[in-house]
Length: 247
Image 1 (tube, rainbow, N blue to C red):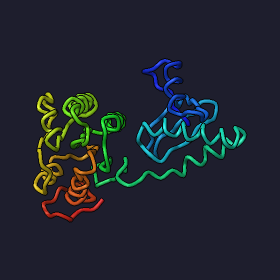
Image 2 (image 1 turned 90 degrees about the vertical axis):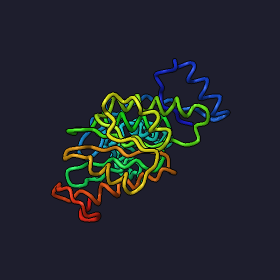
Image 3 (image 1 turned 135 degrees about the vertical axis):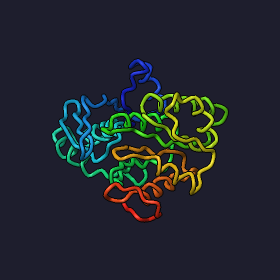
Image 4 (image 1 turned 180 degrees about the horizontal axis):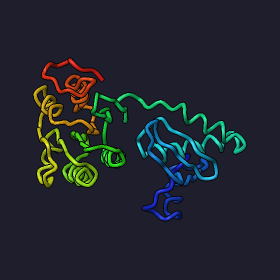
């Protein structure tokens, strides 16, 4: 079992939790990357005692995931083959709708619509905050299966969105309710997601925007991404004809 270091727990407490979960298996503790830089081609990551690699992703939290993968590989094949392990990281291909970057004319979409939970929402908002943009727009939908804590967790995500985004679109009953006091950042709140709503979102965007789209799978927010793709032409002209522009 491999575990990344978590700053909210001291080393002894984290070791006890990890060892209990691992049972008789060995536990490999991994320090987070030393330095992470956003570049056009992805994340440039400096790993402790190993070296640098470029990851073809802009999701900042993937740097810690890569550190776990890297140290696990080195523990299996030996540190003398660390360079080969670093090169292997460059072959990583993010799955579709998981922090997938789509350039739609002057609009950059971070398509993370496949699924969501509170931790991944906060991580995605942190990634959004690191993007160079004239405006950072968070299009967020409901997170499902959270039980009695659902309202509080949706409110926590909206609080992070208020800190990390310049504008917020809140979709679904839980997210729309949580975004009621978004201090002027709220572009749109809707309990439902239909064609009219997706077109309103696409029309509210401006050249230079970076747009994060994220929710649980049942929200099917790929419909928002499709609306953005259809509404913006390659030269950045907004058109009323659906399908006129492609990314």
